Length: 407
Image (tube, rainbow, N blue to C red; front, side):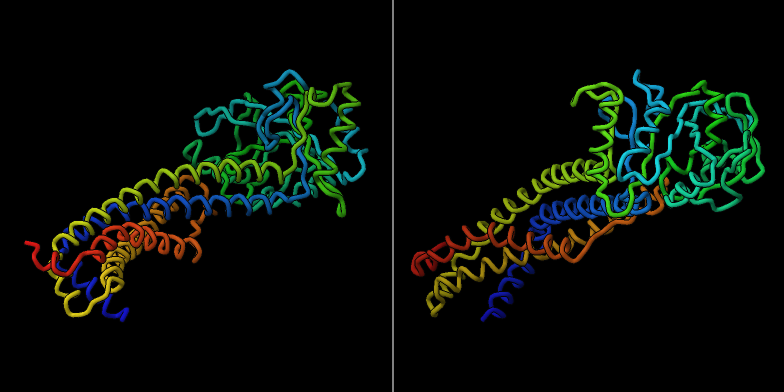
């Protein structure tokens, strides 16, 4: 019986090819938009998860100023509050803290290949214990040359894309560049992390940075590694409590921010989810328009096939049979539109992936799992069937005599 329903539905679509294609256009445009947005959005979430794994979930960042992310931005020079060595000492003595590292950030002029750019310079400690701390984070791995070590005063560690992307010429180990007019030799080149900010970074010894930027007792951010067995969020709360007491500030009036890696990722994901949902909702309007188009087409089809309906009823077709024939046809319109939309959406997502990779985020990959594809296809079928229900009901309720007399 179902085979007969779909055969009649296919015959109906074949006899009205142009109308069927125009009707499906609203469906596959909506499905294409939804698949594209969700697959790229999920790809971004997976990328964020991978970056989180590299940094480590046991990290806490402390930055000066109330609120804001402590994710490596040069916040020390942009707020009145400052982190001092005494703050670092307090943090190191907090229960659950395995190690705490103060880092200096400062914007400075960098000259190479007769070109000058203003970049963020990072000043890191060069003691062996601190270097092991940094090596634990995969984003600090060195691909060529060596890490900065104690005694390296005017040496630098650079991102792999710094020379070619910022100065138009490769800058490798042994190369020389000027930072605020002071010559530095490149000691090592970091691995490509897929993150443009890391790939353009310039890192120099902390003592040198403090001297050059006049930050003798000041840190732009303090990074903490939590001991195994301790919860990063619990340790973060203890750090807040101790720093409030040390800096003599009240709760909710802090002049510093304590952020866990997990909370940063969660914040990014929340914003990304909201944006994805809003954009997908806007794209779903096309599906609504497509549903209205299917309904209009089916009403027209019912009118055109009124005499055919009368003939089928006169030879024994039940109301249910007529209903299912038209619902099957509208469902097929949704199904075919959904398949085309999914294919176009995957193609558009792939183009978007290539654009993001070309921009510099090389680890980015779209994610279109079976749940997304099956859900999009099922949704398009439901839209088709729901849109054809009322025209099908109208056809099913026709009286055979009236239908046969229709001209």
